[in-house]
Structure formats: structure tokens, C-alpha cells
Image (tube, rainbow over all chains, first blue to last red; front, side):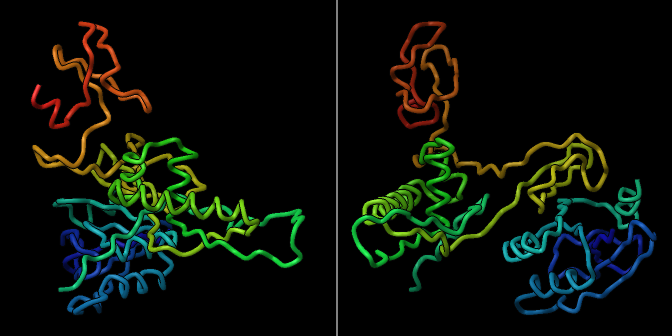
Length: 105
Length: 194
């Protein structure tokens, strides 16, 4: 199963990004093959509609879970209709490697 | 000045049917027409009449104010009465709404997660796989001294004994089991003065 994690940088030591639509990078982790993919967010500096555009990106990759700090109101309804599970980690200083470790348990 | 933005109504369960049809029309040959019931009106009716909540509790479920819920509810009853009396069919559609899924909070890792698939029950936290999670309801903290809302708890003004308010029983008719006084509703301006 594929999980998307929002990250502020492009390494495993970077922290979880607290925003979903305008995060720095999406890290797509496959729990079955342990494969990882870093995607720079094309909507990082978008004036508006960054959330829905990012949802489209996530949905096109066949992802079932998304980990982020916060989801906006437009994004929540979209993910609900796509049946993608949202996981919110608020004010967390967790690194990407910590989260991947959690998912591997 | 632009008007105040319209508040979207929160719907937890969409209706399982998209309408109802009458049968056995004795009087007229022509179809009497259709009543369009909004989804928000259906939800108000479901919360108030099926789940037996009072308007205050139902309005919190739909994330709107109590007077707004009462207005929606009155409209729903009016439409259903019209359908019954005139033999019209009911179609449930439309309304300015959004769907919200159930949210949970995990005690082990401190995360929040939702359940997008209502048919499937959640057994463990999707992140840390622990099963110490609980249903998370967004609680709105009312500023001190607010007049708009009160809690659903009856309190004894003398000894401070509390019990959940019973629907349909005025608090002042409830008797405190400890000091046999009449009770009042908690957090109202009246109870604060006592």
C-alpha cells in the first residue's frame, strides 16, 4: 500500500511539513516494496488552489493514506470522496525517517 | 459590503435512498408533482426525529446555529406534509452541504486520523498500529461569560451535584438527590448568579 508524507526537505532527516497543499516535497512510500519516491511539489508557490491540485497529484499515484500536519476544508472533502485516509500529526518534530519507521511496524 | 458567507451544513450520513414514491392514487389521473427535499433538511429530520436529539444537540452535529437548524427542520416538515397531503413524490437532492467522516485520535502517537470507508471498522491506529485510540469530536471552547450556549447538564445550586439533563424534563423540576433542592441548567447566566 502506498502512503504519501508531506516533507519540508528532500532527505530522510527533514521534518514533516505542517501544510498539505504548499508543502515542499511529497514522499511516496510503498509499505510492500519499501520503495520510496520524492516528488517536489509543483504547487508550492501557487496563489490559490494548491490543495485541490495536490490532491489530484496524490490521487494519480494511487495512494491510500496521507500523513500531514493539517488539511484544509476543500482538501478534506475531496479526500473523503476519493476514500483516501488522512492522518494528522500536529505540532510534531518528527522526521520523515521516524514516520517511515512507524509505518513499518 | 458583501453579505456574510453562507455556512455549509455538515452531513455525517448521506440518505440511502434518493426519494420516495406514493402509490394507490385514488383521485386524479395526472401525477401531482414532486417535492424536492434538500439533503440538509433530510439530515435535520434524521437527527431530530429519528435520533431523537433536541435542536441544540442537532445543530452542533451539523455545525450550524440552533435557530438555523430550527428553520431547516421546519422547512423539512412543511415539505413532507405537503408530499403526504397532496400525494406528491419526494426527491432528496441538493443543498449547500459537505460530508465529514468520523475522526479518531490516537493516544500512543498523538495523531488524528479519519475513516474514509464507513463500511469498514477501524481496529488500529494507521500510523503506530496501537489500539489505544478514541473517537475524536471537535470540541468548541466557548469563551467565558458567553450567553449563547449552555451545557446539557443539570446542576444543584447548593451542593454542586451534577447530572446529565434529561430531554423533555425542565431542570427546575429535577430534584437534587443529596439536598432535595430544585436544580438549574449549568453554565447559564442564571446559574452563574446563584
